[in-house]
Length: 157
Image 1 (cartoon, rainbow, N blue to C red):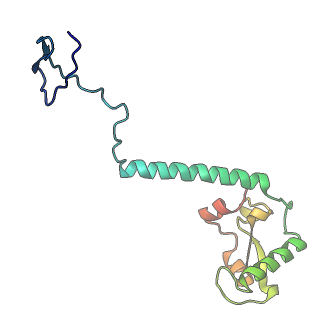
Image 2 (tube, one colour):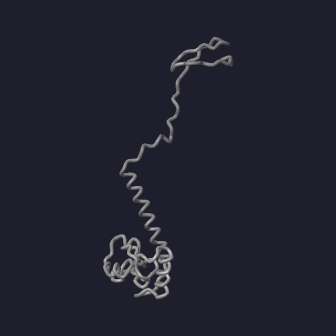
Image 3 (cartoon, rainbow, N blue to C red):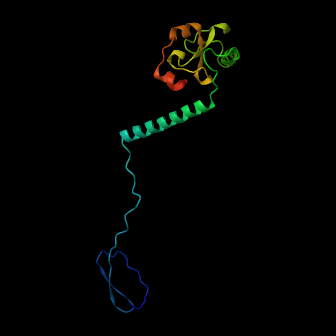
């Protein structure tokens, strides 16, 4: 090879080209590029998306319950203290007025009661995280019944 500079345009795999300086023939070989180590990912299927969402939701729920247990103020057994009940009523009236959050009826200040989200009978704790406000009528209608959402929202043993 003489080192002459020249360019090959449109050479095909296995083409033969002659050097303009020394007239030696060159064979053009096609070497395919390395495959991309990060090929374009396929779109995940519906099941994969649902599984990922449920996994993140479960993780979020575990973190939420852990923080709730760490930061919650526990009042012991039985009734909520009077100062706490007054504080919750005043906060509720300042934010939402004197309406029951369950039935949306307008009620008097004294009709708003503080209830355990998860009933004491069902293992609920007397704590801030397990307290909700509602009117006497809604409170007596609820009784000691709890749904799975009550256990997720409130606090129990």
